[in-house]
Length: 328
Image (cartoon, rainbow, N blue to C red; front, side, top):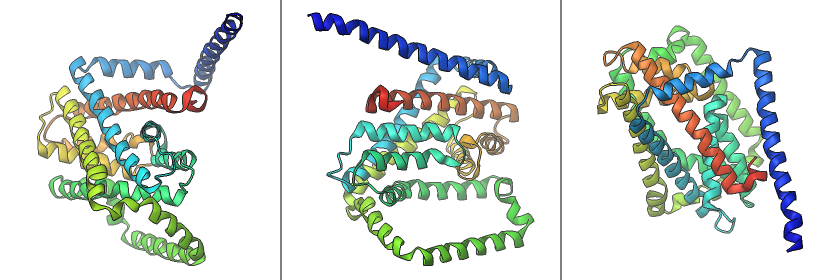
């Protein structure tokens, strides 16, 4: 009993110190933001006003679908890594936390750097996993999304005039520069491959381990492709919910146009989460369906709600998977 009584105040003091540290960090962040001219209060008010503009039913449905989308894709990752490294101690909650972290970071870091962070996290939590193996798993995980994405691009380019010029107009305006760039990139890759040919052989062996689930088509279809298809349907549901929230007609045609535009914007933009570019593409995709101002409002609301919930979801999962100390 004496030992319990003596340690209780210590634990209470530790909790109080952690709370004080968090409060001080928030104060410092606020002070730095003020000195740099960042209007965090205005940003928070903008988020709150956006959330208030959506009815609670639509908001709950959107959050549920965002969670389902992240969880389903994370399960595909779990299946890939579990089959590749059966003795590696691959745990579901950790893979879910890593993938949720990548999703959240991609909303705040440019050029989808969150994905790179996730791959590095995999090499840390799975002892036998090399970076080449994790990268191969990424290729396997992207097969379905690449195929469905190409179909969406074709649909967008064929059905929405000006979509090609909006994102790839530089190739039409500067054809020779585009050709020179393409040739230079190909030559660079060939030269790098020649210089690193011995290492590439070792990387290839590691990559074959990471993509081993492809050797079992039935397992791939049930454990990877099926949950990814579910995730893709959830993504369509998210778009449909926000479109409906802003009284924009929901149809297959509208969904495909928005999906393809979002995908291209996120793939080619260097801004965090494709901010700005996504809004431009959404306005173009919804041209003739709703007003430009309403299309912009829809796009901003979807991006804000998705970003905020993805960050909160990732923080909770990191603490759940790795504990407070490692989750930090």
